[in-house]
Length: 266
Image 1 (cartoon, one colour):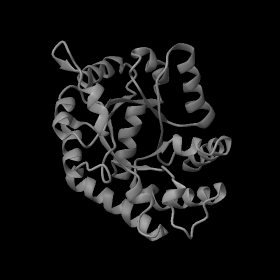
Image 2 (cartoon, rainbow, N blue to C red):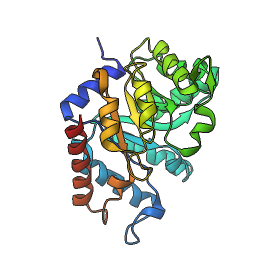
Image 3 (cartoon, rainbow, N blue to C red):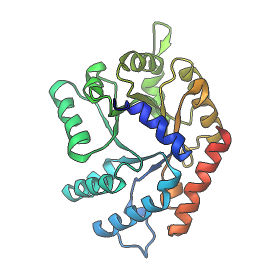
Image 4 (cartoon, helix red, strand yellow):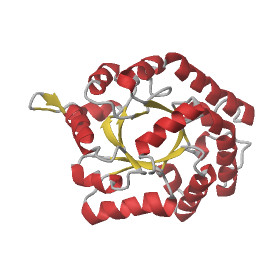
């Protein structure tokens, strides 16, 4: 019998001794001037980054917007990168999809079958209809936006109903929908007080953005997210893929150092 997505997450995490996710959010504007910023140059750079970090990370997250900016060539690049990772690590499509019915079913086919991702980030704004089509296959996963790291998140996510804040309702809903053991949450690192409350509601795996440039605290995020025998996956993008002068050695050291710190705090 095949593993569920969450079981596979745990197995790879243990095998690699890693809870690190490397965000392959390529931005030509942040690449050093001496680097080739063509599509082929970016492809080469991403493959170099994967080869330098694969041993130290559990997953890779591709923010789809950074590929879609190049049009159809960006989609081709995304497919090539997912194929290059080739099951060495978990691949997460950061698309924040959120629609209903037939539309969401087509999104799921696109993400999981056409491109080959293992998981996707989804918006729960339209309710369970926008989540369920992504979790019909127990081997594929969905990380539901729960409490995000951006400053304006409070305009919606802290709305209160029936004595609970909106993000608490989302955490409870995600847990209720987790029949196939393949749902996780996106929980931003910039709100540690709220993180503790969410972890008390369930033990779903978390994908945690907001470390580094957005000001999230690594030690707090690791400690809180891994309570209750849970799995907190720390996403780091720029601090790794644009480390130093973007040499293989600097990228490798950045990933290794982040992974060592995460393990130290676990």
